[in-house]
Length: 201
Image (cartoon, helix red, strand yellow):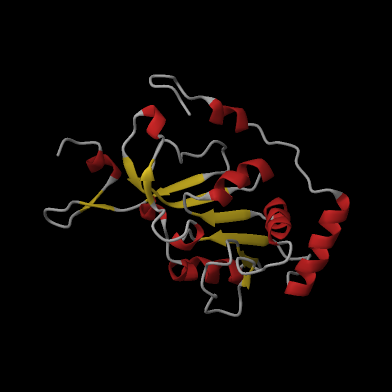
């Protein structure tokens, strides 16, 4: 945990790309599995991930965040997303020749589309497959969730969507982008611009 008033600069250690790879035998097995799943080696790879509540299980979205440091209760469901809202981006990527792969975990519902390869529901070697994809991927589109953090290690460019934390989610590297979640003023339903969010209420 971070002691109160301690400045946190550790993310800066990830500013420079890292040299990371899978062991040769694991990489070969993952590549063979990906070919079987329909991923063509001659096509660029784009990855998507929409965080859902199932990963943490029922009732675990609300918790004491860094309780030791004195922070209050946080409801992590604000970081969840809906995969169907990625459809327009998926269509654009497919039109540009990308192979699109969903990352995630088996608690996620099946995808309603045949043109996206779904690794979220893979059960055998799913972790190695997803790491292999991140190492190969040209782009990851994801919210504030685990794959975005892993992408810093695999040097995968990330477009973070629906960001709730403009500081913690701000890109560490030049190839990262951040889109903040829309904030709506409760009293009148007005969607606030980033400048309005900095003004006094």
